[in-house]
Image 1 (cartoon, rainbow, N blue to C red):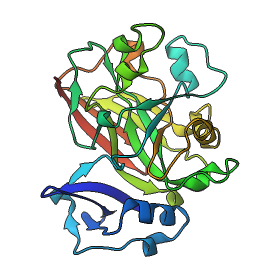
Image 2: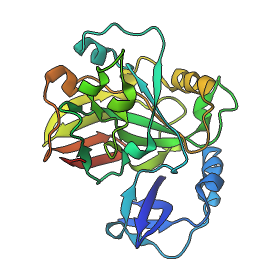
Image 3: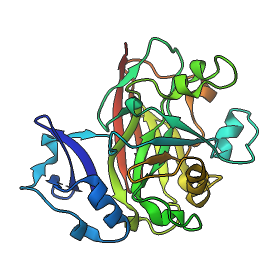
Image 4: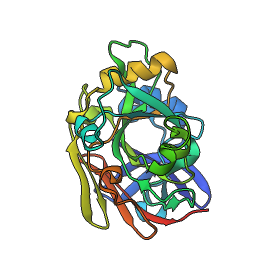
Length: 277
C-alpha cells in the first residue's frame, strides 16, 4: 500500500495512492489513529476513506511526515562511501537530527543557499515509524513502511567550525527530499529491504547501489536511535547513503540541475535546484 500526504485547494490530508488508476483516495481519520493499526497489520480496515478518489495530477505531494515528527539521520553506513572519502569506518552507528524545515516533497525545488558553494546529494532509504518500539530485539515490527530520501548537504559548512557542523550542513531550509509516499512494510518483508537505490543529476547516474550493502541494518540502527531518543509514531530515520557523492568527485549541485533520487519498489524524487535566500 502506498500512503501519501497531499495538498489540494489549500487542504492537507493523507490518502492511498493507486498508480494503476493514477488516483489518490483521501483518508479521513488521523495519521496517529491509522498508522499504528497499519503497522500491526490491520490493512485497509484501519482507514476511513473520505469522498471520491482524486486524479494524482490534481494534488501536490508533500513530504510524507507529520509536522510534529522527528527526522533522524544515520550516517557513515556504507563502506564504499567511506572509502571514496578516505575515512575510517566508525565502530558504532552515527546519528543526528535534521530540522523538519529542511524537508521538501517529491516534486519541490531544492533551494541552493548562498551560504554554500558545495551542495551535495545523498539518496537514502528512509524508515517510517508506525508505533513506539516495544521490543528492541524486533524493532522492524514498529516500522510502518519506507520512503525515499535525499539528504542534501552543504559540505563546506559541514567542515567549518570545531569538528563537523551537521546543523548548518544538513538542515538548510527547503533542501532535503522525502517521498513521494510511504510504501508499507508488508511489501518488503520483515528484514531490512535489499533494494536498488540510485541518484541522477541531469540524467547522469551518480549513485547506484543496494540497501543490502549497509554496514548496520535496521535491527541495529533503530535500537541505537531509540535508546537515545525514543522513536514515536511518524518519526522517520534516514539510513545512510552509498558511494558516488559530490564530496568525492567535486561535482556539486548548482541552480538549474535536476536531481532524481530513486528506490526500486518505492518511487522517485525529482527536484530542480534553484537559487535560495
